[in-house]
Length: 530
Image (cartoon, rainbow, N blue to C red; front, side, top):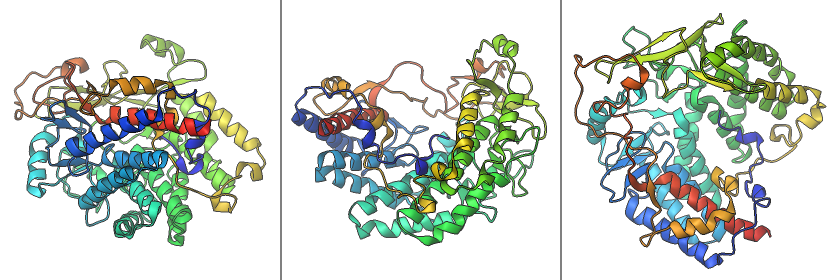
């Protein structure tokens, strides 16, 4: 889990006062560079206020998680992040220009909102026929990205997609209480309520679709109760904000039900952890071909943190009860020092090298491998051999068990009144949206502002090597192609549209723009705090 926002101090600007002294660049230069770069991004790069991840310098090709059409807008790790950045820039500068740009991004997201109230990973302004063509070509041939292999036509909670769009709409609505954003926000919040299962969890996608069962007859995993990629934590965070920022009491019962669901889905010993997803009978479920029905050490770590957060919110010790057994599971599942060394791994003191997946009810590791070159002759398989595992999805993970134990012990030792200090659920504090949402602002070093300014070119671009470039679609491969079984040999096939281009490609990277803007915003904020 990437973060538990509802327990962190939400005003990131407080972190900035401790930053290094800002460079001596004139503030006007910072402001001019921010506006110049942003005008280029919105006027030249964006699709009506929407973005993907990477663009060639001449804007002739572009990529989100896969190659995108010029008419596509990426929601996943894209447009909502830029929209949030624009509100951050507005707060840092007071310049209505940035609010106007945020409005452009909000309006394009509203155009891409589905009737159910959520969003898919992306949407295509050219319409459903164009999007289906993308799925039948680029999406269908992206081996290892099964989530893009079918045209579902529904919304997803995966990878913060619906959560990020909803949180951005909530923030821009509350910024000026502008009624133009309220219907879309209400519709999105309504989907959070409607899609929740009685047990308290959520499916990965909504409305439910059962059109794509696995080859072995396994049901479509998108209807499973999902923890993976923060589906449940994100929706709990949204319910917290609906209840304590929007003041909507309807969120309270679903919120409590979701928190209790985390406890309910913990497995029994010896693998007393959590799975990435569950069938509706509450047993661990299989998802993509390299995600077996298993107990996940990664999810177990994340759920331990989540339960400690729930205790801080409620003061109810039932949320701590399962943690000792979960910690015992992590330690029992870990490789011993000799086995880790045999794999060339040394996790460090207090850290465990664990298989990502363990067979439910046992401590048997499940390691993921693959053979072949593309979707038409490739296959994933699972066994107990930790060698030659896949590299695009970690089969072995490092867990800091000692740190988890320290956090748990410290929390147990605190008087309950101290543990719950600041909890909005107990009326001890307020939940507020952050002044600065973009994590890169708090992490930025203002002393780098000079380098950021000098790297901006005359057109307003930060040009550099792109971090995500994939091969173009050239058609499907053949089932008769070679079937290598060494992971490295399975990479780079031109018929696999998920193959990375290894030669450097220069262009406009959305992450670079966000990080550079964050550095300039941090520099401005640091000046204010001096």
